[in-house]
Image (tube, rainbow, N blue to C red; front, top):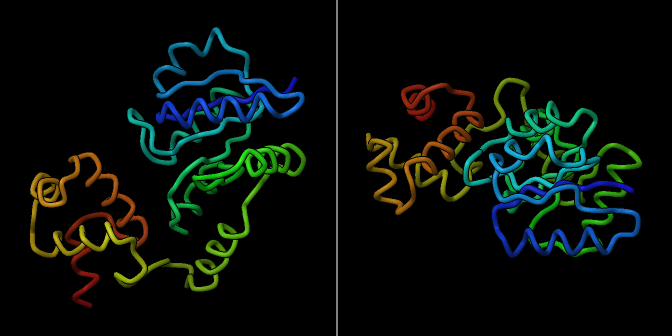
Length: 209
């Protein structure tokens, strides 16, 4: 029996994923949790999965580094990212951290089955849209910096850039955008990664060059 683990904080989508897995012949749900903490608390009592379906923006753990944690926890397991994040740099970072596949929300049972089958047989899966984004980013990369302009950032990242240039603090940006402090921090980390900088000062200097 091919075992599938699920980490998805949206309870309705998590139930849908469970139902999808049960529809695929020869596969069963090894575990299904809404947080990484639930997984670590129960890891000794579950059957090791062959594939983990991972929502990259869990409530208690954010960022692609959780992929490496899962792979250390379950040796030999493959990780398929389940996400609505369309950013090409995010895709690359996930792959660099060990992701084996990428499936965009919303998706069909057939799409999920295809992703699992491809990962099982070849070790990887990228749908055409992800592959196109990845190829475009690689073609435009100089090998030093992936992005140099605001046009290459997501709309939310562009808004945060404008607030950074105005000198707002993390708390002030969160209040202005009506999002949490942690969400601001998450977006800034992605901006730093894209722009190849390590601080707000370095980020602002990009626009002064």
